[in-house]
Amino acid sequence: MVLACFLALPVLLTLSSCMTPAQQLLLAVIPDGTLATLLSHFEREPSANRQRVVELENSGDWVALARFAEENLDKDRSRVSWWLVAGYAYSQQKQHARAIQCFREMVRLGPDMADGWNLLAQEHRTIGDPRRAIAIIDNALLGLRDSAVTLLILGDANSDLQRYEPALRAYRQALDIDGGLTPAWAGLARSYIKLGRALDAENIARSMEKSNPQLAAAIRQEIAGATLRY
Image 1 (tube, helix red, strand yellow):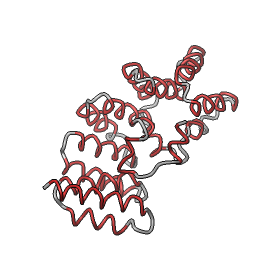
Image 2 (spheres, rainbow, N blue to C red):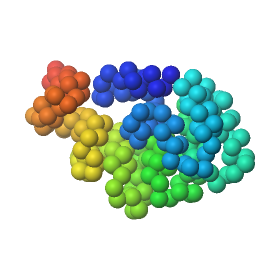
Image 3 (cartoon, rainbow, N blue to C red):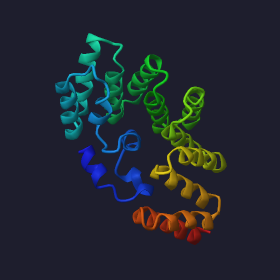
């Protein structure tokens, strides 16, 4: 279900039509878009557990996925991987308060892990609280110096608040770390358009013509739309 949506992704600038914010973030963090990849570096997890997570995630059975995570947490509440799975499953059910609790526990148990901070901040964006998301990211960046995705979320949260200059700075910092982070290029172009800097956005589109023609076309479509509005 979710994996199919990732594979069918048409344009980064219209991500929200296909995915929830939690899914969008996982796409940025995990190249193939599956929770299995994220769980693979937790060597303590039996392969059968990882496979079961993949099956439930692919089928979109979020209730069963949350239950499976909680069952494993009942055995050991210090396992960060299961707090992640539980939070993700609750987020997909739009039980955002419970998802936030799970991601907070991730941060408490693994303060040096970017994923927990990122998912916690993104969940606050999901419920319409970008200011809280920015505060979380600012706190995370005290210890995380090289997380491009964390800076991407900072840019997105500032964009939520129509603070496009700070958004530009965050997107640029993200791209300094990872020049291939396509959502950051999309956010940078969108911020330029909002600031009336169509030429800068066009330069991004031109640079993307060969590597990502769909993104280039989407940027130009947004430039054209902005021109018509003004």
